[in-house]
Amino acid sequence: MFAPHQRRLGLFWANIGVAAVFCSAGFCGRNSEPSVTLSSIGREHLIKFLDASKIDGTSLQKNLQTFAGQSHPFGSPAQKTTAQWLAKQAKAFAENVWLQEFSAETPNPVSLKNPDAPANSTIRKSGYNVIAYQRLAREAKCLVMVSSHFDTKILEGIDYFGANDSGSSSLLLLELLHTFKQALPNHNALQCDLLVVWFDGEESVLPNWDDGEKIHPAKIIDHLYGSRYFAEQLQACKSDGKALCITSQLSNLPIIAAINIDMVGSKNIQYTRDSNSSVKLLNLLQSTLAIFNEQNRLNPSPQAIADDHLPLHDRGLEVLEVIDFNHLEYWHKAGDNAERVDADAVELTRKVIVTMILQLAEKNR
Image 1: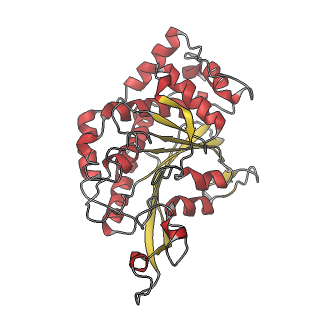
Image 2: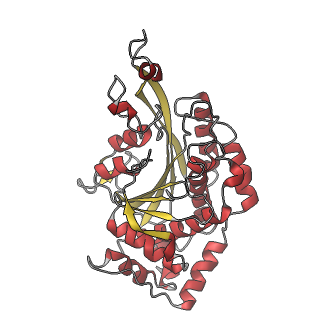
Image 3: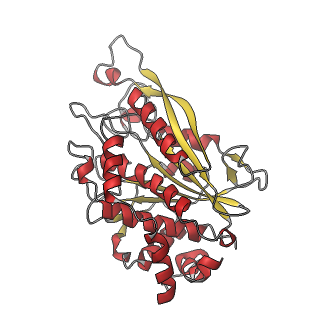
């Protein structure tokens, strides 16, 4: 991810009054202000549902030790192994899981250090997006998409494990699938199914986010490889030529919202208000945080974040970036290890995202 001015810089829901939250989040009026009006009984039902699948900190640490036990950058054998591991874990919960293989031209780092070196200026690398489909509705009419990248940054002289960037969000996606598998709410209340995507190749191959375009002789984009490929493959839905669908098997299920998650494992998590995100989805995030009395976790000042949601935004999807780009003590530095990932931060994010998914899945009711 990149931020300017930094270096890279139904029945169930009827009981909890979700319609009031949804309208307050801006989906029932352009000028709506987020003001949650849940009854105490409603909140109790929601908390009970979420507590049934609460993240186990010991299991999270165990999975982080596996996921972030070694560096696994885009195009490496270790990254292919990580993609296969994620797919295997997801198959325990999701209805369908598959790998989306792609290849991309990347800038050769040798050419950056020595433009006159007798070497090709680019190197072709293979990548693997991991995609999981989870049925939520009895007769789905749409998809809610949630994503994260799962590659680690190449850092010279550092064996970078990326437990927070990208381990915290990658394992959170598995927890989302687990939540809906073991505690599925009333099908009749939902109109959308869930699509979960782990993107490969978010990180730049070169040291800095825009080196590929600005100073490398190849002058090519060097980031967001997997999400750019995924976005390119989206096609017009059969049911609505203006909407976007993912594959022929899901060609009648338009993606109504895409939530990208990154770096959500810092203690005292503080979410960044991304100015590249949909205002409606930002309002929904704010009002959902308020359900848990955590509305102050979203920064009041906007900041533009470049991450895997941008290629989806460029295709016309409603997007939201959920990221803590405030706690950067170990970002792209030695020390981004499993023991520094805060289970409470990941758990809060799970509760918020699950609640948002269920609200969005009722959008067409």
